[in-house]
Image 1 (tube, rainbow, N blue to C red):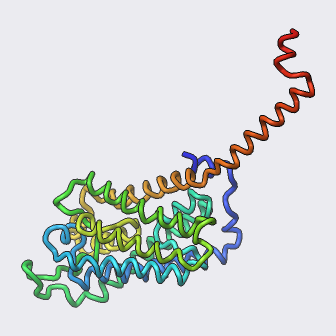
Image 2: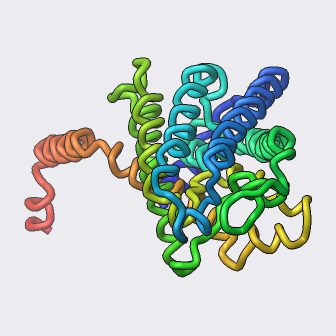
Amino acid sequence: MSSILALMKNPAPDDTSNRKKLIKQSLIEFVATTVFIYFGTLSAVSTGTKLGGGSGSGEDVGRVFPIAFSFGISIMCLAYSIGHITGGHMNPAVSFLMFLQGQISLTKMMAYWVAQFHGALLASALVWGSVKSLAGDDKGEDGTYNNPPFQLGATTLSGDISTGNGFLLELMGSFFFYFVISQTALDKNGISKSNLPAIPIGFSLVVVHICLIPFTGCGVNPARTFGPAMVNCMSSKDNCDIVFGPWWWIYYVGPFSAAFLVAEITALINWDVDDEKKYDDTKISDGDEQNNESGGVDVQFANE
């Protein structure tokens, strides 16, 4: 709870007084999230993979690697492109992490959320528009690409694992990804001042996708899950039932819970025990001087 206590104790950053700047940053987040989710989910469609429910039940595992690298390299490139302007979040749970760590205000977080979720919707609509002509074409054993094709890269839970398994996978995958972000992009004593943070961030996302795609499709980003799911729902009720199963909540609770855990772990890492020891030594030293000036506390008590 130290991150929440720190939020209550420390004033929020003044990052909303300049409304034009906030609007500019939010619009850039909107564009970047659109581009990120467009190319990430399009890789699932172009490799012919149904993420999670499909890739975990017999799909060629070789298709996982192009998808993983598409997401990882995309986030790396976009972080280099807009990180110096907006922070390069492109993920509501990352914005939540920044809020918990006192990097942005609540208002800015909410503005980024609006931009990110709407960017995800536009990205999935653009993916559908880009490959709509594939719908109904012959493909594989089921005889069709489906409509929308391959569910637009939507995340679904494999039937081979339980909802609890899926939640733990999303929690741990998100934790690893956000922990790398926190300890590279935000750590003032680390590599945050260099041009390197985007590289480990991108490759950590690659690792998470390789591990999670066969089981959950790999969300670790509520906006990335939200966009394809909503566009699938708009296409037909049957598609909505596929992408919004009883497990839908793991793709939202998992990442936001992971962001909170990373904020707490980061607070522990940043706990300066050396300064606290110096402070305690100073208090003891000051107390001894006062006791010597008054003849000593113990002596006074003895005389009484």
